[in-house]
Length: 119
Image (cartoon, rainbow, N blue to C red):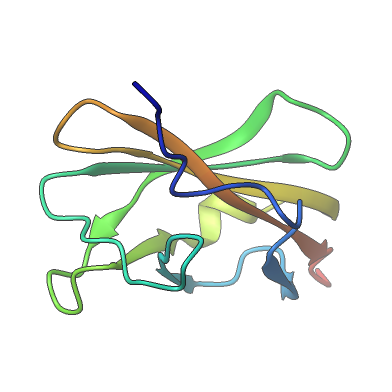
């Protein structure tokens, strides 16, 4: 039996880099596609988003993804001001999908730059 990987890592950082200022209210929106560019149905899945300092593997922030329902391949992560307040630097972020079947995927990651807020 062969297993098919829906999310091969062709490019390690496939999410667009972006900047935020520490303490911003921000909603991150993710659309999930497989390697053939087909939308992945997230119905019944759970999504966890994590952020760590670049080059580190210990998360400084973990949030649950909120499934959009429509389109069925979209989820959001809501960042409250307290989530990034006091942070600054270069970070890596990844999300994990646990499908309704129990299959576990970590298909994407990217870079976030957080600029220190002016007091």
